[in-house]
Image 1: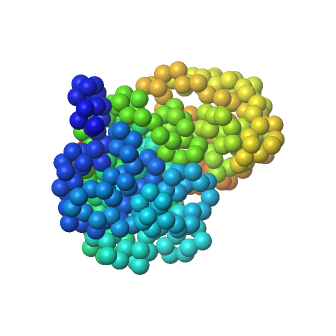
Image 2: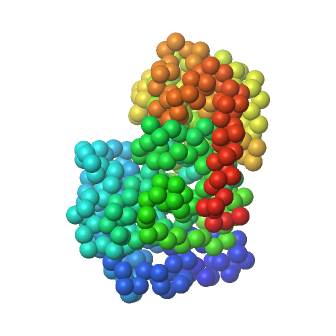
Image 3: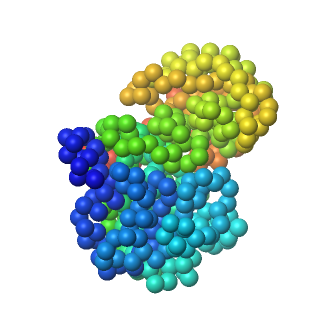
Amino acid sequence: MVELLATTLAGEVVLNGIDVLEREGFALLQGSRIGLITNHTGRTLDGRQTADVLHRAPGLSLVALFGPEHGIRGELDEPVADGRDPGTGLPVYSLYNPGEKEYRYRPRPDQLEGIDTLVFDIQDVGARFYTYIGTLGFAMEEAAKRGIRVVVLDRPNPIRGLLVAGPLSEPKHRGLTAYHELPVAHGMTVGELARLFNEDRKLGCRLEVVPMKGWKRSLWFDETGQTWVNPSPNMRSPTQALLYPGICLVEATNVSVGRGTDAPFEWVGAPWIDGRSLAAAMNAKRIPGIRFYPRSNVPTSSKHAGQTCGGVSMIVTDRNRLNPVRVGVELAFELGRYPQWEREKLVHLVQNDEAARLILAGGWRAVSRRFGSETKRFQEARERYLLYR
């Protein structure tokens, strides 16, 4: 089916790592006992789940599944318990269980017994604080301790591999949402990030990446020929993925970023926001590629559930010119004019103390002046880890 799609569309379809692996007869995994870190986004071009494909593949043994935040099916917005996969009958171990302590985001030693290869196949969205890349990093650490090989099946960065923007996080903020010192938008694929993590963090992991075939850094997700599958419950379109690196910067504060509405990450509001005033202030900045308009909303869940919130909706007018991180920084600066806003919590996802202070003091101009050269150095340094042009 993969060959047919690629031939029929004259090379316009990007083959994911799992498709390349299957086309090559699973040669890389022959004789392996495998633990698969995946969720519903781990799938072939024709829609088969990676777990099912590896379970049926000849010459290898899939023995356990590991699920990230939102669970193996991507449906939960809460801590995830261990379970069993009804399709394969295999145990499913949660890598998002805050009830745990040392291993709440990591595979436990007993879960790794008998496994010689961990395979990772999950769709990322291109932002530092999207937790799936933190899950990858922690799994690589545990694998390295035990001499377990890690194989990453690569997938596209849906907002292209060109957008590198925002201040880098500081080591003091390391965690699931800041596994490594990255800009807010990193412009890399999960396979490339794995290579960076392994070398920069000196993990000593036996890492292999199965690259995509046909992907270029300039491609948006809708140019890959692939089908969009919501990577998490509130990530419902490539447009929302594009806005996410900016809008999520303020999510740790007391504003709604659209969870519980029809437009997550395309709307921001709170009961005390004047939508007309905020829209006018944001439009006056003339940020390329985006417009703002006032809109009230009543979230049905998450922050301010059941309350009428003033706020702004966003229309992307030119995605090729849009820097979503600039949008988020300028939005935070304008929210700073409201005495009700929890400005002290901005740092929780900015993950850089000085950058959070500068955002509140001077917005994008102040942040880019201070951190622009640092972000550029990261962009240059990451070149050694890139797999695509």
